[in-house]
Every structure is written in C-alpha cells, then in structure tokens.
Image (cartoon, rainbow, N blue to C red; front, side, top):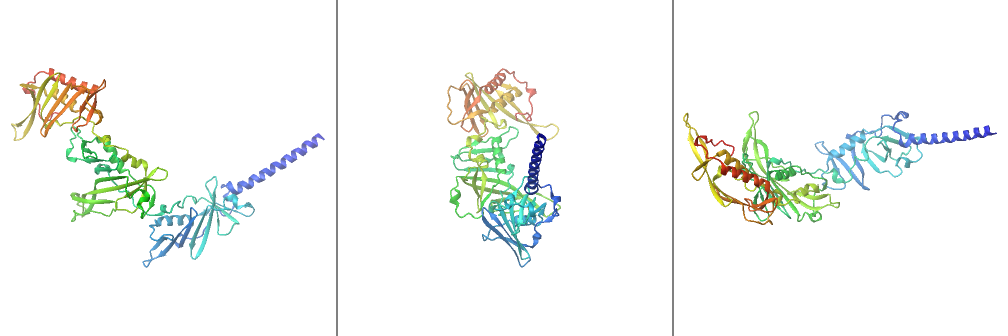
Length: 528
C-alpha cells in the first residue's frame, strides 16, 4: 500500500510539473521570446509592403492629439511635405522621410498568430500606445503599436486584423516627436571663435563690459589686452585667464529645444523686458569675390555685419579673397522655464524662442566686474620709464633710466644702450632689473573697494613714465598682507611674503657696487 501511495504522489507531481512547463513554454513563445524567429515563415516578412516614395500622407499621435502630414507635388515635380494642423509651420521634411524609411523597411522578426494569441493585452495592444497611419497608392494602412519587450522589440498589428501580431526591432517608441516643435526647422547659434571676440557686454543686474584693447598688448611684460568696465563707466585692467573663460563660454553657447518659431507674446517668456542682454562683438573671416572686397555674406539673421576690412589674404588659384568682417551677436534672456533648468532666450532680429541651459546663462549673470580685474598692482613697462623714486626706511632715492643711441663703426645702424643712475653713481643694470621686475610683478590676493589703509606706508614707489606719474605705497595691513592701491585706484591686499622678496631685492640694489661703465649692456636686456 505504501508503494502504491508513493507512486500516486509521484504521478500527481509529474502532472503538475508538466502543466507548469506547458504554461511557461506558451508564455515564452508569445510575449517575451525573440529568439524563435525560425518558428515562423515570417523571418524576413515586410510588415507594411509600401515604398516610402509612394506615401502621400502620414499621421500619428502626440500626447493624444493627431498630427498629420500631407505630400503635394509642385509644377516642377518637386515633392513637399506640410503639417496639416498649422499653416506655415516650418516643417523639417527630413523627419518625415526618415520615419517613412523606417516604416517601409520594417520587417517582422516573428509573427505570432492563432493559438499563440490569448489576449491582445499580453502584447500591450488592447490599448495601443501609438497608432500610425500611412497612405500610399490610395490605400491607407494603420499600424497599432504595443509594448516593448525585454529585448527591446515592439509588438504591432495592422488595421483591424488582430489575428496576427508582428514583433519588430524598429524603434517605434522613439522615432516620433513628443512635441511638434521637434520637427520644426530652426536657427542655430552663430558660430563664434573665442579668439576673435573683441567685446562682451552683459546688461542687467551686476552688468559689466569686457573690451579687448589690441594695441595695448605687450607680450614681453604680459600686459593684459583686456579692459573691464563697470556699470559706472570706470575702466580697470582685465585678467586674461578670467576673460578667456568668458570668451570660451560665448563660443560654447548653444540652443536647447525650440519653444516657438513665431513668438507673438514675448511677455509669456519674460522677453518683452529681458532680465539680461548679452552682446558680443567679434570678427569673422569670409571669402568674397576678388573684385568686391568691401562686401561680405550677411545672410545670418542672428548677427549683424557692421563693417568689413580690406583683403587679408588671397589665393592665386581662385578669384576670391579673404576679408575680416566685424559682427555683432545679441542674445536676450527671459524667464526660467518651469523646472528652472533652462531660460527662454531669443536672438536679436529673430522671432524664435529657444531654451538654453541655466549653466550657459549663469556663466555670464553670476559674475561681477571684480571677477575680471587684473590682479597685478601696477605692471609698468620699463621702456616707458624715465625715473623711479623709492622711499624706504625714511630715505628717498631717485633712479634715472638713460637711453643712448650708439652708431655702429661698421655700418650706419644704431643700437640703444640702457643705463641707470642714482645721483652721480651708475647702478648695476642686472641688479636694478631684478628689483624692478619684482616690484611690477606684485599681484594682489584681494581687491576690494571697501578696504582701508591700517598703518603708515613702509615703502613707496613713484613711477615717472612718459605718459604721467604713478604712485604705489605699501603699508602693513595685518600679519599676512600689505595694503596698497593699484593703478586703477582699487584698494588691494598683497601677500606679505611677496612684498618681503621685493624689499630684499631693493636692499640688494642699495648695497650693489657702482657699475663699471664698460659693463653697460645694450637695449636687448630682458628688462626692456
């Protein structure tokens, strides 16, 4: 009896296992398996047997609303696609043709039919996520799109035929737009080369202007080319590295999504009275006809050409020449969008409103004029120096720079010989150069108009330059800094150790022996 009972139990268990196996096999063969394409003769069957060139109408759903498109043929036999729901919509026709290419080439990797279909809900087709309709040769076909399975395949059926379900790899869930503006043609940000920018002006709260003064460049002394102008019009020397970051930021500007191509209510985006306006002046090289060097391409509606220069280069193998064109870019910044991650922006002269990431805009609006100040105290070119008064430890000495033109005995050429004197003594040139370099090389760690002098000056330098006089007085501020005022009148704090090094170089100058006249060098010395 016990043996019969065990046998019966084993039979029952076997039946249960077979039942489970049958259920799993059927489930895998329907909804989740894409590896059984050989089970059907539809291994390479086209789902929709059409040619994309024959399609004359397309429609699908965007957020529950129908978006439809119609192709018309003009008198010149040119085909044109239009968006039916909005006259004048700037449709990017390549979006339509791309979708039609995917649909016309869509092949079934597997066909599920007959007893394999228990319920259309198993495939997400009871309530399709998308319905795409194409018309070709007078015949309309509707593609009902269901779920995407674990292998990224989609299930579809055609028209009203629920007896056949196709599994396809065509990315039906991502090939249609979530907003019709994604299918609109739109402008791009003008391409600006960072090194060609000569002016950046930010208007709004904490506004400032960065202006490139090309003629002021002096690579030997690393004199800044840029000036920083505050809202009151006061100019300050600009820091090359900080401003380089800004020119790179301009060159990196790009639009996000297109919001509207024909804005009629600018107030809806905060663009009727922009919170910030970014103005950029730059140059651009353009090729023009060799006999017309005074004109250049002005086709861009987002920038303005203000002038063009004479030819800068030409090619003997063509009849074109290169001109440098002055251009302006103006970007208006409105409100932040709903999630705060972007701003509404518009180019001057355009009707298009775009989104631009907050990080792009913040790079300009979160700066203040002091962020761009040159941190040197006074970078005075020795070539423009006539004399230098130094007051230290209660004693004032004057150092005079002499320039002598020396004619060569071999030819008519002349060279300059530079020397320095203090009273009746000729000063060792190398020692003076070392001191002078450490003096003009002092950089502030902090510049702040709110700083005030705490003690009397320990060291004062008065530069007598060819274009005027400049005075710098250094007084102890605390245990770490000396206080001074830079050549733009900005109170500054300089690291005490750097001032100490400068003072040590001056003490070396005081102790230096008189230079022998025969040791004078020419004007090629590094200080020059």
